[in-house]
Every structure is written in structure tokens, then in C-alpha cells.
Amino acid sequence: MGPREDEFVFNIVWTGTDFTYLRLFVASQIAQSEARFRFVANGCTREQIDRMERFAERHPERVIEVLDVSTDAIIAHGVALDRVRACRDDGRFFCLVDPDIKANAPFLHEFTALFDEGYAAVTSGREVWSDDNLVPVGNVGVAGEHFFDRAGFLFGSPHLALYDRNALDETAARWGVGLGSAGPDLSDAARARLTELGLDYIVYDTAKIVNALLQSDGHRIAHRDVPQLVHIGGMSHYLSPPGGYITLDDGEQAPDFARWGITDRFRVTKFTARTLRELTEGRPVPPIPADADPAIARKLTVVQNEMAELFSTYASW
Image (cartoon, rainbow, N blue to C red; front, side, top):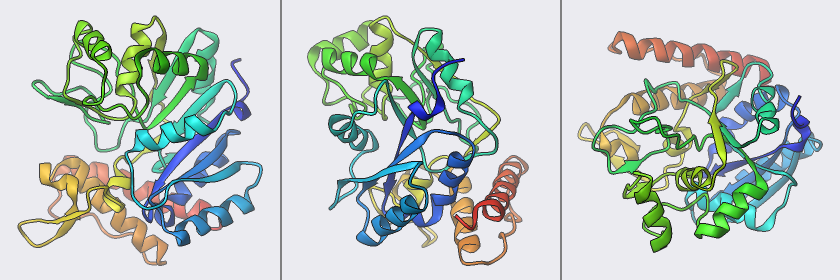
């Protein structure tokens, strides 16, 4: 049967003004589970924190706290989570979930039973725009969307993760790492161990290093993508990019990650952000761009339908 759902407290890191546009995703997570949630403010304005606190007051049994971990600037996602881990103890588990994951049906049971099978962690959260989650050949880093290397090694997802707290803390202490360890900060011993494992990259996204070292320490972790969850992916980086905005060649303002190319990620998050803004202002869902190629149009259709259903179901939250 696995642990009870209310044993899990999901830490949701909010940046900038994300809460205004993404709060209904979390409403769906609350409605489709019995888990509890902590809102972690990361570089948010007082107005945004006030919004979070009002939401928490309306759902006091489910949102246990609004915790501000960085007032003046947006810090790395994993670093924010490590600050939570350092000052809060929720019992047997430490959990995290992104604020742009929509739950369409009960989902947590898909993961909880794995702890009774001896797993120390389970992750999920493939993005709508992603065609695969493999580290590309020749890549020097492991990004958030890279869940596996080409040989099948599991780096896991930083988008939804549940950890056995003791296993996580023991591995983190042994190697001097955390969820925010990115690569340049590693000790010689930790770097050497990753090299032995054939995982010698320059930079790693949230939790990739600790997930690798958990397995090195003999723990099992699993990744499960389930149809009940729809993860847009990258919305926080689009709405409140840590590096700010840049100007593209055509004069458009875009989040800093667009410097690496106008990818499917950029197209889907841009359309989703526009859709969220229109729906938030009470306007209709925008049409799919006429020049979208068929593969992108299919992804945008999913987004269009999911966002319309999200607002029709949870607007009163």
C-alpha cells in the first residue's frame, strides 16, 4: 500500500511573479492528492507573498507554510530547496514539485508504493515540449530535462521528486553535496566518484549530482512518468528568468534561455505564458500560431485544452 499520502509535504519554489499565473496548477495538485504543501518564496515581492499567504489561509490543512528563503534575489532552485532542508523537518520524506504541473487525476499512489519496495527516491515530470529526456551526445552538462544519459543511467527529474529523508541526508553529508550542487562546487572526492561512474560533466541541474551519488551509495531510485500529470516545463524560467530578459534579433523580449536557440521549449512556454495571461484577464484562449509546424501545433493544442480546463475547474481557488 505504501505510506499515507499526507506523510508527503511537497516544497514548491515560487520565483518572481509566478504565483499570479501558476497557482491554479497547484490547486489541481491539491485537489488530486492528499499531500500537504509548503510554498517556498524565492526572490518574490511582498505582494506575491501576500497572495501566497491568502491562498494558504483558504486551504490551511493543505498548505502548511509560506517560507521566504531569499528576499532580495532569485537563487538557484536547488539552493532554495537546500535552505528548506536545512531548517525544516517533515518526517520520513523530503519532496518537491514544480508549480507548472497539472494533475488531472489522483497520482501520488503511483509513487508512494515504491518506498515499500526499497527505493530511496522516485522522480517524475516529463515536459510537454520534450521528445526525449536523454543527455545529448557531446553535451557538457546535464540540464533539468535530461533524466537519463545515453547508456541509460538515471539522473532523475528535478520537477517532481520524493526522497527518503535519511538516505538523502546521509549521501549529502558523506559527499558534501546538496540538491543545489552544480558541479564547480564539488569536492575532489565527489568529482572523482562521478568520474569513476562515467558521469564527468561540467555542470549539473538541480538534484542530478545527489541522485547519482545516492545510487553510488547503493540506493535505488526510480523515474515514473504517469498520464495523470501534465507538466508544461520551464514556465518559471519563462515568467521570471533568473538571468533576466534579452532582446532577440526581431526586437522581441525573451527570457535569457532563448539565447541558446528558439527551441520547442521556448515556443511552448511562450504560448503557455500568453494563454495564462489571457485567461487570468478573463479573455479567450489565444489561437495556435498559423505558422506552427504540425509537431509543435500538436503540443500547443494539448496546452490550449489543458489550460482552458484548468481555469474552468479551479478559477474559484
